[in-house]
Image 1 (cartoon, rainbow, N blue to C red):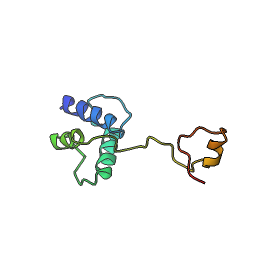
Image 2 (image 1 turned 120 degrees about the horizontal axis):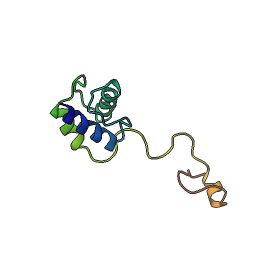
Image 3 (image 1 turned 135 degrees about the vertical axis):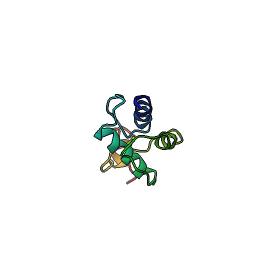
Image 4 (image 1 turned 30 degrees about the vertical axis):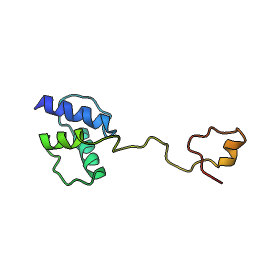
Length: 94
C-alpha cells in the first residue's frame, strides 16, 4: 500500500496538485491533492483511500491539472512592454 501511495503522490506532483512529501502515507494533504485533481478533470471518484483507479487516472493525464504556469491577476498593458519598461511575459493588448 505504501508503494501505491508514493506513486500516486509522485503523479500528483507531476500534474501540479501536490507539493508535499512523497511519504507513502495517505495523509489529509494527499487526499486534498487527489480531490483537487479529480475536480479539475471532472471525475467523480472517492479519494478517501488510494487505489489503482486513482493512479491510472493520474498516469493517463498529460500536462498540468492544478495550479497555473502564469501568475494570476491583472496583466500589465502592452504599451509598457513596447516601451521596454516591463518584460513581455503576460502582457495584454491595450
